Image 1 (cartoon, protein in one colour):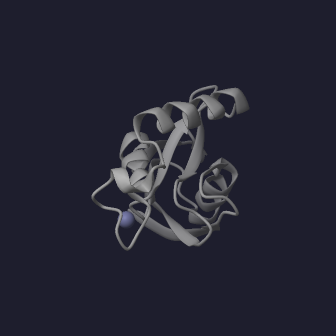
Image 2: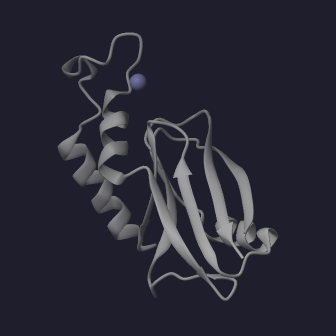
Image 3: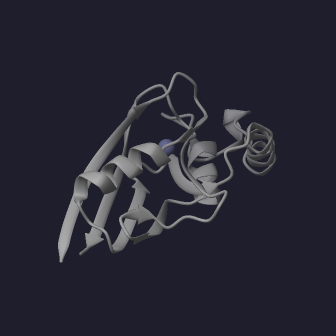
Length: 138
Ligand code: ZN
């Protein structure tokens, strides 16, 4: 069995951002030389997500509105976690959007559905953060 590991770094300009990382994950798969197996992609930070969904800007705005309804950023004082930090909402948003995805690798390609794209979801940005890509197989 072959095994491949890589960290992808991100530094967003805004507090919250969605970035389509499918091309970068495809590059990892190519580098790995693995043609049959599994590809795990996970955020290495507890205020960021990796998720799969449609690359459609309206939907991304809907996610933003939905997440702000469930875990509004402000007022900061509403959260017990906020003392030295102001990112309680980001922890909650990360929990809602998930930590990781696993994609099947078939014939050297990510075996995604027709509209599936892999996203990095940043909820407390403006600093360097990482995503782990781990691919195992033959
Ligand atoms: Zn925190």
